Image (cartoon, rainbow, N blue to C red):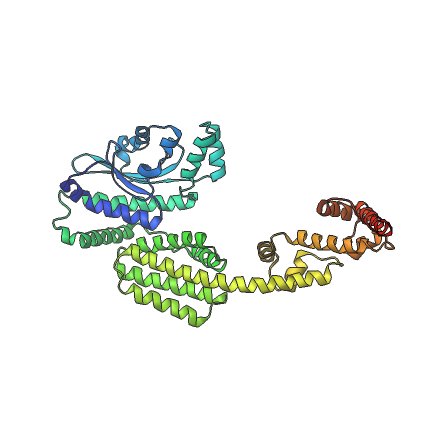
Length: 434
């Protein structure tokens, strides 16, 4: 990052604030670069702090070629661009021309739009021939890079283009800020004014209802990483659709909280507990005057709900699985399926399969087979029983399959197991006689 004079910083202050705002709300690195590719300002995990180029032996200056296209295509100013860096990571950028003819680029990224394992196999192992410690170091850095769907990348590009237009307006004046003490107010009003003007000719995307539903589902599943990702998407929409009106942002954020609390109540959180969490948010939100702090506060409250749901589901799951185990012990000699056990404890087969595996440390089928084999071992000690009879007594329908499962779990076939027991009994009796 280049050193800047106070005057230079003063000139770009609005652009820097927009970069910070975009990075925090979109959870993506964002930077402002000059026409030489030098970083004037960066927020989040951007090209300047990625480190992957250095890890795989690519010199940093090559990354600047990524933005040369935007500088040369002067006729495209104001339009969004999408490019790959030398490593193969994706970037979004929008060039802006200043009144003095110099070009600056607003850059968002890096991010992935491919499966991480595929990227490692194709771009690192195959194309770059990375192995050993070099590959491990590159992967360590790569896992920090966000993975974004093409649809979301398009939305992020639209947001970046919108922001670039606002910055372009601010750079059109020789001295956009006359007083540092009033700079924040000017930033807020200019950004708000620009967004509202943009709305007159171009509608912003509709409220993402599907994302809202996925957020509620992830909260109900106590999936914090997924819930945080979806919450950030909704907050990003609220941020840019509010036109910079902080009171409106706060109101819409509280509406989102009410929605989250209703979802939590639906899966078992008590209404009194939900009311307490919401009241806490509203009290603390009164003293918040920063968008970032508001988003962080909502994230903390959401995590409180997830912790409550996890605690409830954990206790409930223990009871449900204990009942399921009791059902298995009572019915192991009959034909029994995962669907039967799930139905017995009023859970969906998919959810039951997941919580059973987590609670018991093995799959449903493995648990049933282990129980049946242990019961068959006890029956094999009764020498008057044929193995064919034992097979049906412990719930197996096929003797060959029973033998296969027995050998896999016990290490020997049922015949060898019975023979070994007989030999040990004879040996013990002989030893007593002697």
